[in-house]
Image (cartoon, rainbow, N blue to C red):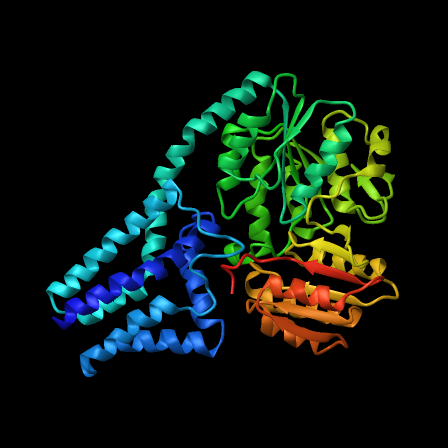
Length: 491
């Protein structure tokens, strides 16, 4: 009888626990094995309380035979209420109960219930409790098993997009990089828009289904250039995109530690992103990065490479074209002008269009608040170079007034994440009067870095709390930098 009570408790506990981890799966784009990573971060990386809870639950599972039966019931209680801080419903990123998510829930839930049934029938209370502890892993397995099916589900839209590209026949420009893709795309669309019919993939639509949707919904007859932003989380993803959307021009903007935890080294990141050149006629590469200089040198023997640089002015194919206008990202402009050259457009002939280049949304966007202080919105940025540039923008925005930096730090930087966040906090605390640390993800590293400066440090649990702090403390003539933002499935 006791074992079936435990089975019932684990079934009930799986409802809130399952909803938490399914939301993480959805927010992480259904990528297999990401749920377990987030489970580890939440249980073991967010302080004593969660570490104590999960350690207790695991201990009760493996030492259940030595304990009174009722003790094992603590495990489902712990899993149902924890990890503390991870919402079931979500605020910044609520769960969307889509058909795809229902498939994941079914495929993870079925073996879970089977394990519970086996444990109940064989009177193995450790197996019943262990199944609950392993719920994030079961969701990851479901994601892995469903990936081929989900790809086939999208084939019809990809085939439609490919056929539309062939029918309309635009020049296809594909842009990748660790960061700066969206800004480069915006610059290029603006520069070419004065003389050509240009369609660019919207926002950060940079994966298979996003680009297929962009083509199917936005490409129209008469389009001369289609600009596609391409991102990757692993080898082969950009190559697969280029199979059905073969680019005429492949451009590489930057290489940095973004996604370093997925690739291991920046050289490996460059190698994965260089797949964008495999089917292209011309490559445009910013050689200000050592890894991209290597790619350019390797590819020169089998394709035309246009090298660009932003060091000491904007250079295209060895020729100095111009200086970067104020508040313009030089590397992004250099790549955009290099692409113009690849398309047969003289970079010098379009310099007039560079005087009013657009700013990509949430990338050092400057807003004046109703209370009179300046807001620098850099919430879509998560790389060391961009963060350093944003600090310079903060200094210019308020030379004499109070300056504040609000940040959860940078993520997906692998083994250098702590180091880069510590360094950023050091620079921020030397420049700003206030450093507001959001959440737990990089709290310790940001704290360490802030000890090197003079800024007052405030810790808040959410961006909403940070915004309240800003409203209460900033006034006319002041400036605040919101550097990066993380959805609430991050600690």
